[in-house]
Length: 124
Image (cartoon, rainbow, N blue to C red; front, side, top):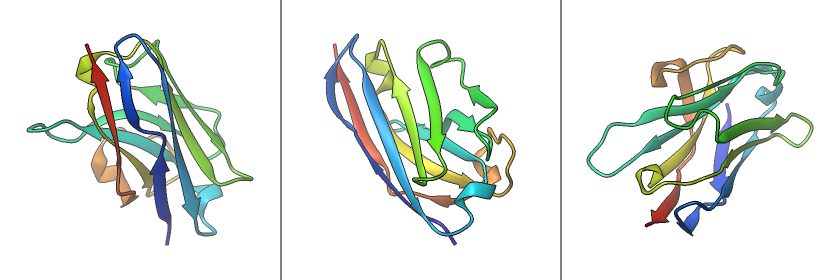
């Protein structure tokens, strides 16, 4: 079993940057892919970024590609998401998720553990 706790959200002006972190507990962290999703008010949860169990491969949604970086530290059992050039449309609750396998997963169906989320609000 994996427990996930996100941090790093907050209020930021458009054009600014944020670094979200996710701390995991459980022995399987090193063997599973990880991902970030977000959900804006009135919208469905959407994929943001994912990373393989060894950190060698990553994937990003088109909406954040080129201005985001997902990374992980298996020794510390942490997952991070750096988002630059933030836009008001990035406003959402961001969730950290643990995948069912070590591969990249871009669908929420590929994940079986979720954090409680951290709010990111971008003001214009």
